[in-house]
Image 1 (cartoon, chains in turn red, blue):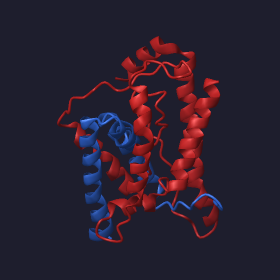
Image 2 (cartoon, each protein chain N blue to C red; image 1 turned 45 degrees about the horizontal axis):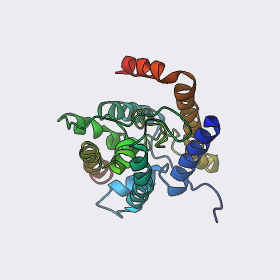
Image 3 (cartoon, each protein chain N blue to C red; image 1 turned 60 degrees about the vertical axis):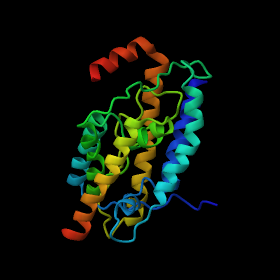
Image 4 (cartoon, rainbow over the protein chains, first blue to last red; image 1 turned 90 degrees about the vertical axis):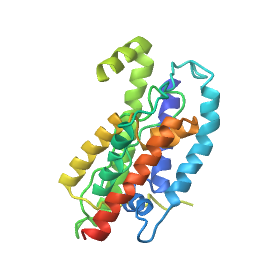
Length: 173
Length: 73
């Protein structure tokens, strides 16, 4: 059951990214380019995502396990460290260089620390030949990576247990 | 309603994408979360820490885009 719900959540998230244009670098650049044809539509996508996620997180924050019994832990850190914002700033630099959103599933049922893995779509400048295939390569790669990350999380949460997860996190930190 | 996946045009070469990916990883790691994490998940939780991070990466995004698109090209 957890396998199916996690897969459904990941697929829904990935489809949302693609449909909203979040996987399209020119669209992301349009949000950041104030000087020319500023396109804030992705800000509306972000606002919509927050509207949808806020009630779920409010509900989830009072629980230690998901409705289906999966272990979950919301981020506890609240301190604002001075260097952190500067490091956070490296994402848009990367975006300007051509990568897209580092996206991982943000479902409230599995939030050790949201989105630590960077999944970005890779592709080349479209060649005169095969341009049409290139156009769909990015979203396809993103969708594929989303599924991989989802499966990874699934293994992490469902089969390794909370103890192993905590040990893993300590190693990463 | 939906005729197909929206086209996504890549604007960078292979080397740039690799560098960009590394920067994405570093930024997500040292920023304690990525755009979705801070901007969607954590803003939904009304986290002031993430509001700072989100403001930082959005504001800092304007500069390199302006430089790359309007100063260098």
